[in-house]
Length: 230
Image (cartoon, rainbow, N blue to C red; front, side, top):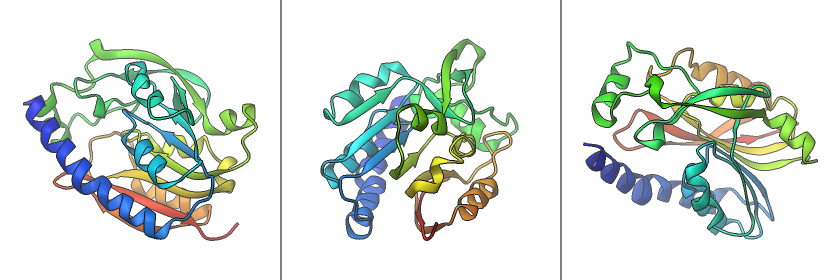
């Protein structure tokens, strides 16, 4: 079942979903020598896409699953890879490493979620305590302060329900971010997940939604926001 799911998931992602995002960015989001942050880089599909669009881009990629870091480093010398997670504050947390690594998360799942039960059927039980691993978590503000990064041109966040925590740890640097692309859940799989909290945070920081992309046959979408004023 896992192999069948991944075959169709990758097909829809590679040839439909990411293609639509690439076309939109190419025609509508123009960045010169950008600084790009990818929070939850996984195997680097979005990094590769953005690297093809934006020449001379400098990437900061965060992926706590160290088994995936080699794939990221192969993309190019302009790719900086960090083997820890981004969250609200500096701490150590347990991450769930699932059979399908697309679903690794710091979030707690809602055991009553029908969507979770479907995923469990497809990929094996998610958030099994045997699959817990401790990882270092750092806030985006702290990382940028330590590395003297003053701005981010494009901030991509895909952390399986943990997006709001990432934003809360970026209260300062968000003032100097031009675009945000993040995954928005359309299901109840994660405890305490609130799309409204995410939208309110971005609205408060002067971002507007310019485009959303529903993933085919799945209950989530990628949304792109643009800062309209400081």
